Image 1: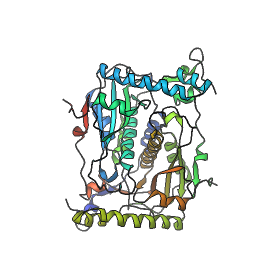
Image 2: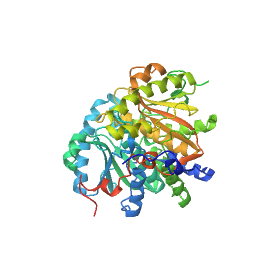
Image 3: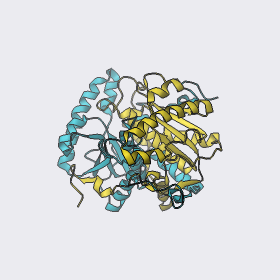
Image 4: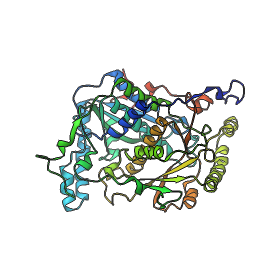
Length: 235
Length: 235
């Protein structure tokens, strides 16, 4: 495959007006961003129809990827027996995690529900194939982890599209990926990036659940934005 | 800070109706996802007004983060002298990258424009503070890189919000992050996750530029989705 010429009928002819978003369209994008939640307990049992799921997966697949390498895969898990195995490895790791927090914090930690593996009708394991696109991938030459980052962009697209479809998503990370590998038959060279619990929701927390439960607070954005150089506040 | 009780006036009272998105709202979210591009050359010089930039940064700040740790920072770079230094480290790395491709592919690589550092009126370096949230972060105990992944979720939120605002974003990864560190005075313990070129656009490629330029092709989604276990196609 060779590049098209930059003159004549070259790819520049594919440039098209970006087209402004209307105020309503812009508001809808912000609504998805602001009303998206990490869901643990609000999943409804109703299965996700095929066309809805396909729209959500296509949204993920249209994420940016380094060198257009599209390194992601999506394993759809619905079998209760498989979900039970995943729940088991979560439970074991979660007990370890609880012991890492001191005193009162550990007590609080044990009171949190941190996954919806069994309750959500669908689980999706999102992986990154680090060999996809061959040994030299445009844009990955000097930052090897950009393929993992591309996969995370796909996850965030999936999450926002799901929100717009009325579907909640919860990202479970309290397990050792090596324990998940044999359950889903994931080859050694494939990286497990995320394990998502997915299902319709009719209620959501109005703000992040960890904030509502007084586990952590939203930081002021102004403290996180620097002007020109690390550490310099904006005027 | 202690957790609120789960009975009486506990956090469950903060559950609210999720509220269906209208067909128009859903379409707007998908429009942002499908029409988002990695922009290299279409940037307009017009500066981004403060309120627009704040909306884009707030969108990033409302990404999911592991344990609500919000590990991101945003360094806003506008000084042409600083941008010139960043462009220099890109240029050096890009020449190295070109030599990694064989023959015709290397010739093609050299014809691609892969950054808009100088042309975009604003550059944003997005970093991850791996110490934020303390030594033990909820959800990060068994998957250490989830803080990096949270930062990438913020970047994807930023990218989509920017698209809705008529602002293009291009992610430049062809440089060694260690070379960027002294230019922006980034401390050793902070990870450079992304360097973004940001500016208004009035034209965009109708499909990914690397596809339009015949560098790579979109993979069929069906090849990337597995049913229940790695490698099993959907029926």
